[in-house]
Image 1 (tube, rainbow, N blue to C red):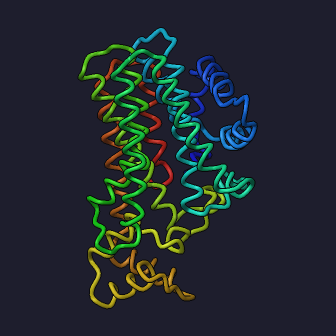
Image 2: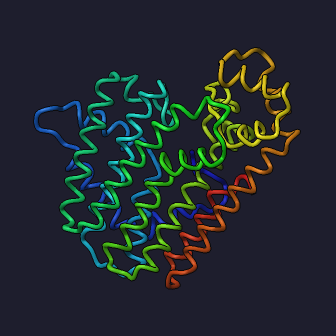
Image 3: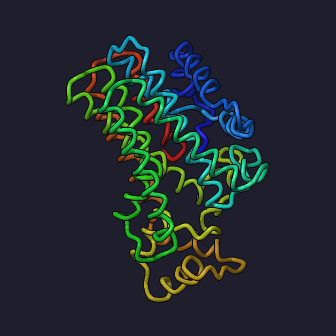
Length: 333
């Protein structure tokens, strides 16, 4: 999901506040994605890492550590670790989803091949574990290795859940916690752990990342049905055409009568889509208030993120993270 928006952007303010540390993170990423024996590794990695992403996840780690008074240097290693895990999952996702574009550019699997994308993703996962170990903090290793496993688990769960009308909101939440929120919450949690703050603050940082990640994904799902293509970089209805059972559809299916359920079964489970089906789907979402209910859920998770952050000591970085929770849902507010 793009965070571009005409309003002032909290992630830009975060980037400015963390400019020095992010410079160190970028240098470390470039150093560690090098390979003496396989030049394709830095080629593929650079294509994605330098494609203009917001680097939100590593900034969350740096912000959490600095906010908790950590002087360094290992928050830089952890931020690079988080970015490597994220990049590895993107490389693998594009193969699984057979994607042709990522951030407005051709995907690595399109420019090279699926084998290169999978193997380079594996390399980045291995590099991320090397970086974790260098911190000498076993708890950090536990948090980030658990996050990596949870991400993979969420992706596998989505394979079976995405086109099954029996998928309910609890399963959807497990998928979202896996594929999106797990890395957000790990990114913020390890910042507090490396800084050595008390358990209440570490828990608040985890809760912030978890809620922010869930809000982030719900907004992404909502904008697929009512977003501006220029702002989102996606066509309205892409998830529908790809037969993804996202939260708006799950809410509509839960209230569907027999005729409506037959429609959802045809277009999502069986993939037999015809002209006019997207318009009919949008009508059903509107009829059952599914988009409005999805919007309320996203705003609710944003509020949970802000509440968690309010438990931490007041600082400029804390206020930026609170603003970020508002900003993630700004386009649907």
